[in-house]
Length: 450
Image (tube, rainbow, N blue to C red):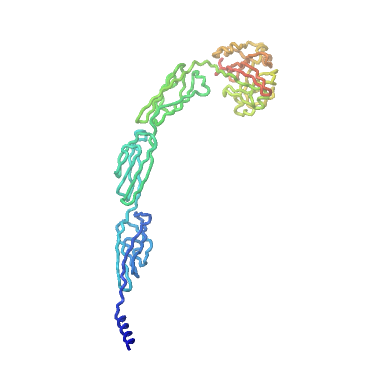
């Protein structure tokens, strides 16, 4: 009976007990992708709510704007503004809680600027800067090598650069939360320099008037030029690289005044030109025997206009037109030698030229039986063409005879197809087997005279 009574009491006690409700405590936070609050902005939310069974998210200005999931995924914002984010949590016990946070969405930050050069980039160079940045409210300019060196203004005005070279321009912008930077480079031209070089034309390298001079303008950072010349065919010129012909012997002056609108620099150089002797001299010319020529070791063909000796493999259709002198040496002992007209090579072992010139030679003055005569001493003392122009050079059977090496020096007289008269002085016969050659000096008129 007692045991039954206890059971009844326990049932009554438990039947009268109330079930306690589970409270809802809402909590959440969020992260912005890359900490970038400039639109478009992507936000991910972390739900740390306790006791809730159902969730209601409200994203003001967001896409999507609502969600019923515990974790709503990524929410995207496309417009600037301050937006509320609300989370409401509930459960079956009727418990309810909510939390609201605010997120600030910014305009996109764009850093950009344009550079304008006022007048030109010669030192001192002045530049202005147009700030095209958006979504920002603070600016920090740095002008490497400029004056001023820095600025906090949106548009910094004029900046002056005096040092030549590259200068970095840096703009740093901020919206209070994000900072961006852009760098560009300007180049200030080198300081003005006036300079030039000159070189006589190939045919005038003896500096005998008239001398055509090729000028090389080496001025730096110049935009205009004023040349002046003494003793020349022109006295002044404003061309960048004029052509000038010096016609008066003596020490002449070339002056270049270079300018760029901000500075002027002047330089002078002298050139000495001489009286025209109408005589050109070549010294220590090597002319090979026939085997040296055909083996392409020492050439036998000489051009007065190009001033070069040519071997067999160097003769082209263009070069053969310029050959004036051909030496034919039969062997290394120099027993039979002669100078041959380029159009008479059929008498030698050389290949016949197709477009060749005609040159008259007197190989042997002693056998010539003609009036033309020139001694070695007269050759050596010859300073102009007076002696040559008085010679009457004509071919005779005796004058065309071969010669040997017994007479040293030997003087060979010639007249080119153009009428230029000249003389060859054989100074030495150099024996070197099949590569043997003669060593000669040559004096010839630059222009034919009557």
